[in-house]
Length: 245
Image (cartoon, rainbow, N blue to C red; front, top):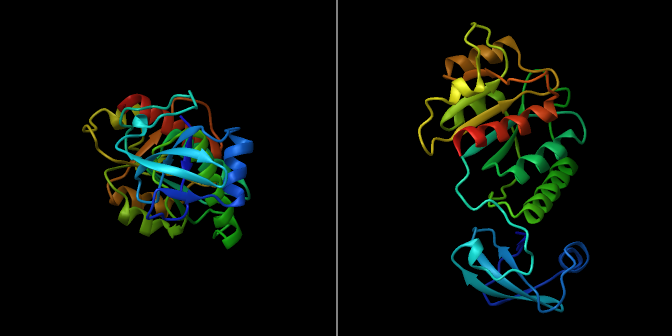
């Protein structure tokens, strides 16, 4: 199922399309006037959207699958595990790739973390703008039900403080408590949130590992080869979904 995100709030049944939005619908999705597609606003309300020249005619629907669609591609309709990805900032465009893959897979939220070994200590305004566009495109193309939130970067201690549910760190424990991911999730309760921490190219420092363990984090290894920073997160997201869905 393809999805169209309504950027601007609308109080009526008609949603005017700007040039970029029209280009996406007509040239990227290759729709035509008279076609219908699912739309979602910033409050996660869904609509059946009838396409016309220059605007959409919106009819509220209770669930995404209630909408009449011309696009026959399916999307996962059951409830996905709640996964909050805390990704330490990587170099260059790797952050865009991570954001795209994570949202296509259906993460509940994505937070970029400033850790000790990050080679780039912050996201610029340009980075944030680019990542935001990538996320919007990923949600629309995949039909993901993930809410789209503002991109931000936070410190490692702040990330640990706000992390919900079971905290999983993809890293070797400094206290020899490392386990494989299936073992770490074997006692997870139905609906329990998972906060997944993935390091940058340099991983996590020993001080950060101690902070995380004191917070109750579980240190996990994946049953695979050594993975790059931009690969580890998406691999783990898929593994968590298979283990808990």
